[in-house]
Image (cartoon, rainbow, N blue to C red):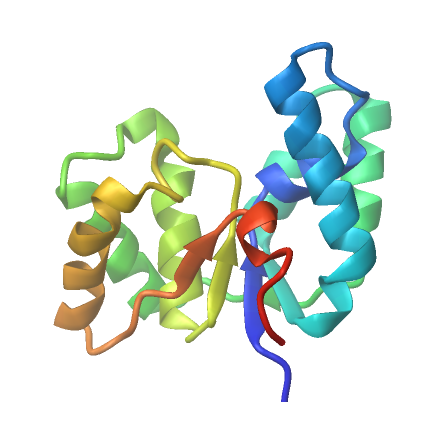
Length: 159
C-alpha cells in the first residue's frame, strides 16, 4: 500500500512555472520536476478544491498548466472536522488571515489521515518551528500531524 500524500499548491506551481532567474527558486523548480518524474508514482496523491482554486489564479496559460497536472488526483472534501481544525490552526495566531488557505491545507491533510503533506511553503506550512504547535492541535482532535516535507526531503526517502 502506497503512502497517502496531500499536495498543496506550491508543488504544481513550481512544476509548471517558467524557469526562474533566482538560483534558489530555480533549484526548487528542478527538484520538483525531478521528484515528479522519479517519485510521484510511489505515493497515493490527493489534493483539494482549495488547491484548484489557488492554481486557477493568475496568468490563464500558466493556470491551465497547473490545473492540467492536478487533474488526475482525487479531491479531499472539506468536512466539519476539517473546518474545526482550520479554525484551531488559525486560533494559534501564527497564520495570518490573508494566508488562511495554509491552515486549510494543514487541516485537510490531518483530518484525512494523510501520511505526508508536500509543500514548498516554508513560512506557514513546512516550518519546523511550528510543527509542535500544529501537532498539539491535531492531538486535541485525536489526529496525527502528517509528515510535512518538500520534494527535496522526499526525493530519497522510502518507499
